[in-house]
Amino acid sequence: MTILNILEYPDSRLRKQAKPVARVDDAIRKLADDMLETMYAAPGIGLAASQVNVHKRMIVVDVSETQDVPHVFINPQLTLIGELVENEEGCLSIPGFYEPVTRAERVRVRHLNCDGDANEFEAEGRLSVCIQHECDHLEGKLFVDYLSSLKRTRIRKKLGRQHRIRA
Ligand code: NI
Image 1: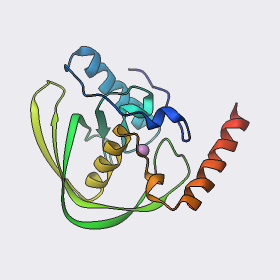
Image 2 (image 1 turned 135 degrees about the vertical axis):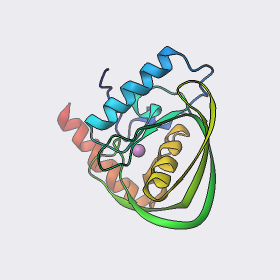
Image 3 (image 1 turned 30 degrees about the vertical axis):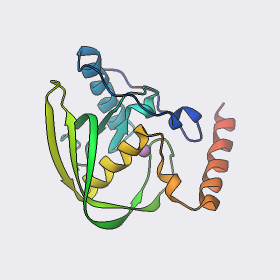
Image 4 (image 1 turned 60 degrees about the horizontal axis):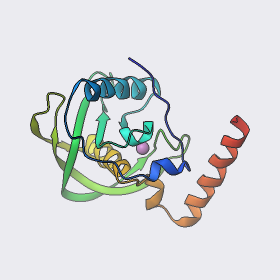
């Protein structure tokens, strides 16, 4: 398995719209393994292919304490269910920043699994939030887009500065 490079905000490649996975083959399964490895190493609880500069509709998540309950969702389609809830969110592409975001309490995910079979999965709580956050990435959307433009600009300036120093 390979640890992949995670793009960081404000990298414009994070804004690309991801394309559906046409066929679940060995290359897609390898990508899923690499994404999980990358997420665990970071460490994080979710990762979208867009974040590793692969613009395919695919996300991985694991919100378990023990980091041993991985989920892979290929071509995920969400149905939002229930009340809206506010949770503090962070993002591996926006390191060091956590802000409250409002999302649906529960979610139903139609998707393909790693065998290419159509499947349905229902999630609530942290897992639901995480799945919604990762699916946003596939649309080129980031959690900072839910914040005020003042907050977003502040974060962009701070991260932009860090990138220059690191380079
Ligand atoms: Ni994220």
